[in-house]
Length: 393
Image (tube, rainbow, N blue to C red; front, side):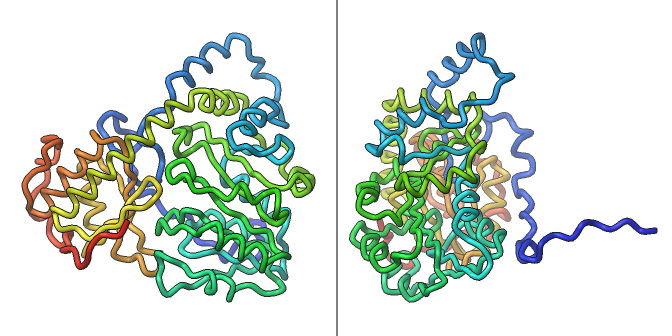
């Protein structure tokens, strides 16, 4: 008798299989020989104090015991860092875990979640897994979504509204006034503002938390703090919301080492500030040199920029052969001809500009490296697309 798999719930069938990692060789390479610019991660290691503190702590830690499920020490530091009360903070083992907890708390079949497009797949997948209906907002200008277009997608069944601010694909930023309008209009929905890239842009709506109980802010240590390998995320919201969120989120806390890493990263905030300054220096380099090279591009308020090219997949392939990893956006409506590239330190940006200069046929960038010389002429075909208009900040 043939054995059969156990049936999954129907809504799981609506999810796509995870895409195969295009950078299969990534983890077999020496980290010093690659430039990973595909996930909006920090391009530097965490503060040196993180490794030192963890190493020192290992002698005294009881790793056979569960970590602090209330993350008390970390929440106290986050309260000081964010200016939000201790009881209005909940910590989780990664951003996706926090998202899963939110949707699991508020959504069920028959309800809807509105997502401001474009969007990464994490939050939509979390929504679909609950059986709730997923609704994407549509915008005339993908780089500047209008609040009226967002409002149009809200109805009586809308229970969650998700906004990445800045948007992790387009870089679009909603103003505080627009978020206030949305919070006032959608009183029966929890408005989730994902501020994963807050440290790079400095824009936040946390000052609205005391006025609007239907607001939740998501943040993470995986970006500016360079802790993607020991990911910690946290939710900032009214303490009355956390009373229910924590019922589902209990025991989803970061592990002991991740908590120590996050605490130490906050203590050494000057290190993160220095990295952010270097990213801003790279933005200036990109603005000056991409214009000179004739590329059509958009530098965002976050830690990435968009490059418009004739053949994104070809550019991804070309850079991958040179151990530089970037993202094309083939499944994102309106972004089929764009690649998204994380912005790193100036020395890293120099390497990237060197290769982009060779692709465009321009003079080699001054700070580049000879590694780019490995490219052949057939690898450059159909990649470059001349700039059509002035770049937009």
